[in-house]
Length: 187
Image (cartoon, rainbow, N blue to C red; front, side, top):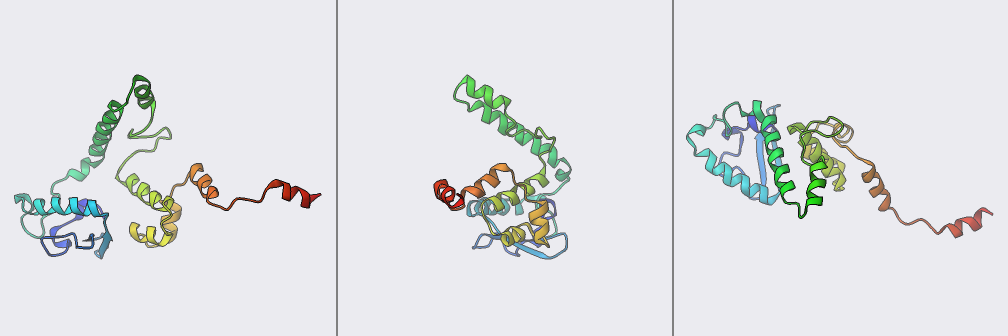
C-alpha cells in the first residue's frame, strides 16, 4: 500500500496505529483492510512517528492524510537524493585511498545499474520480495506479505535470482559420493 493513501481513519481507530503484536492495518486500493506484521524496531519507530504526526495541525481530523501534500510526485527525486547522500557517506567511510577508489568505481547505491535498471519505490518492492525468497521464507508467506493475489505473480514477476542464488542452493544439497566409488561401478 503506497504511503500516500494512508489516512488516519484507515489505521486502527486508536492513538496507537501499531498493535501490540507489531501489526499495522490500512486500506488497500481495493478498499480491503490489509494487516501486515512489521519488524519490531520498525514498528516502534513508526508508532513514535505517527503518534507525533497525528497531532500536527496539517493532520487534523480523521480524513486528513498522515503525509499530506503532493510529495509522492517527487518521490523518485527524494529517493535519488537519499541514495546520493548514502553513497557519499559510504565512500567517505573508506579506510584508505585504495578502498575509496574501489568504492568510487563501484555501482553500490547508484540510482541506476549497468543494465539501466532504475532505483525507485517499486524496485524496493521487488527487492523486498526477492530478499524474502532468498532468505528461504516459504513462497506462500512471501505472497501474503506482498499482498499478491497469486503465487505466480510473486515468484515469477517479483522474485529475481542470480547465479549466486543458484549456486547457494546447490551448496545446501548433500555431498555426492566420492568419484572412486562411481568409477569402480562404471567399469
